[in-house]
Image (cartoon, rainbow, N blue to C red; front, side, top):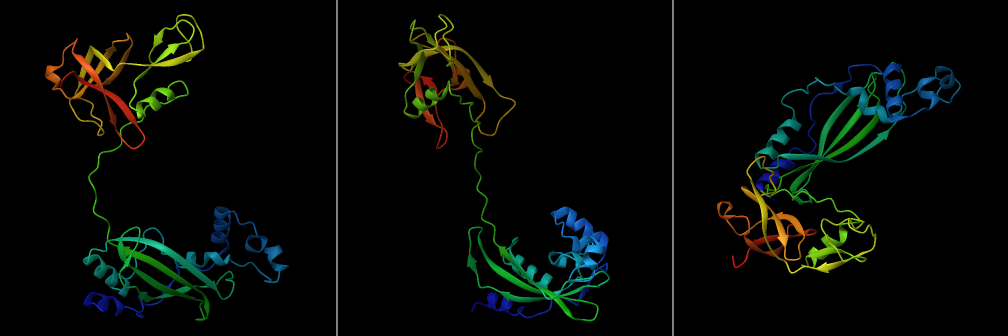
Length: 306
């Protein structure tokens, strides 16, 4: 057993601190708020007459409220210097700085009744050896909480387990490129791009080419169409060099060009493989297909011979 693991195991069985009394006695107002919040409409919790006629003989609290009676509130603080704090600092010092709750098991000995005063005593039950999890390498810390009434009788227990783990190193990665709006009318164009084909929508009635794709021919109003493979050659018809505002998915300065294809249609695309200062209207270009992620391939253009 490593020295560090031995230090962790030394905390097993240690009480976290003195018993912690709840700030309020079991009361009808808190029960009502709880039942409204969780949607529990059992009459024995909120209706004195129904409760009096039940096996309980009076109003009782929902068992799942057990932990609510000892909560310290928004600004409450735990006693300083307890064993739990020491254990957490020891794990932090070894790099196990992240924490996540993994499971909670409650057992109930009896129903709580109006006027009961609940206290809780917590102890560290176990600290696991180093475990490899999907979140990272860490140690499971299990605590057992025992709830008692004003006479010291046990009314319930809770087993609570957390994982203190070492967070994985952050990877500096570029956010994904913004997704284009793909519709039923344009899906065929993006599918062709995945196959490294640049296509142009063509009216099946009059043969007119059109881009961007649409459901109807602007010339003859026909709804029938097919697609023609383009050569991928063309020239810069117009362009802009974008400096601001900057989107993290792109490199700047960003040259966005309007490309006129040999077939006569035009499309907007990134211009790559050239310094922004060297771009001119009329520059001959050739298509190049770029897989921007696992699902999206886009046609971009670079200078012919460049």
